Image 1 (tube, rainbow, N blue to C red):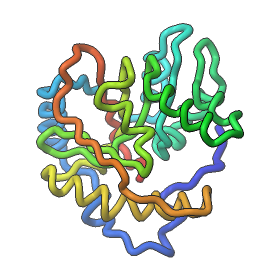
Image 2: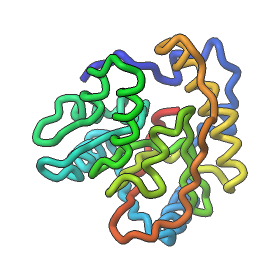
Image 3: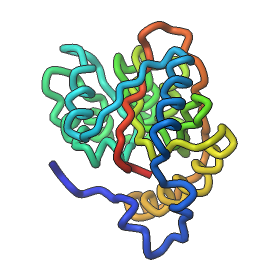
Length: 221
């Protein structure tokens, strides 16, 4: 597994983050209540203790020959799933195609098409105890797959992203995840990030479309 990516630890010295407020794993009762509320919104929840088990589950969600895309996710990098996608064994990872495009307009078109992949993987920035799943990114290329575009949506999050309310979850996106992603984007792209598009997934109307893979350890931003 490659390790050429950034984690929270890389920015601890430069960012004044409220980790005691936004990065703690709640007790078991809160986790179980949150799972029940997410599932009430017709989102299947699969809970895993180990990153390896979660990664194996994610791999199993990819049908042979499917088109697959992901939003940038530190969590997916940390558990080694990004490496699986880039290997593109038995499926077409659209991210590899996009990476080979030099023309800006053509790349933008390919990103729009990629939002309609057979399976789209992304990570959540926050989970409300009441069951909402929140995600944000600057352009909207990742979260555009969430509401409708992708045929199947597989979201990954860890228990440290659970917040006591929807409002607190929005605060986590803006006050914790954004500063980290802003610092990462500055390092990788030479420009910062912003909450350009914010999506709150509250109820899935399509049966068996959307699932949340919940990790018990602390991962991602």
